[in-house]
Length: 119
Image (cartoon, rainbow, N blue to C red):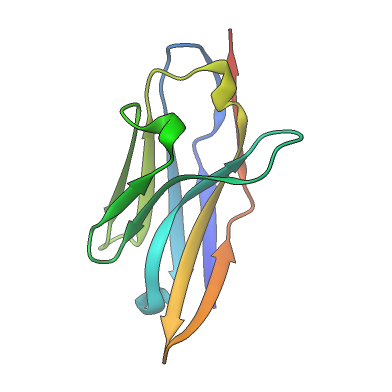
């Protein structure tokens, strides 16, 4: 089992910045990928950014060039630096972890943190 706790959401004006954090605990040795997804009202959950244990990164098209994901393996924490925020970035942001143990996959989600960008 892996527990994920997010922090750092809030209200910001368009053009501003926020930094989200996600701390993992529990069976952190099994984490293969860790990252962020978001869900806006009436929309499907979408990829924001994900990083593998090997360091490879994927970003959603809408955040490329504005958001940066990073990971502190010593603290079992993943960060999302969000710059040049737009009103359309408003959503609940969820931390996610994909764990692999003996080729069996388990997905874990945080409780979500609200990000609101005002115009």
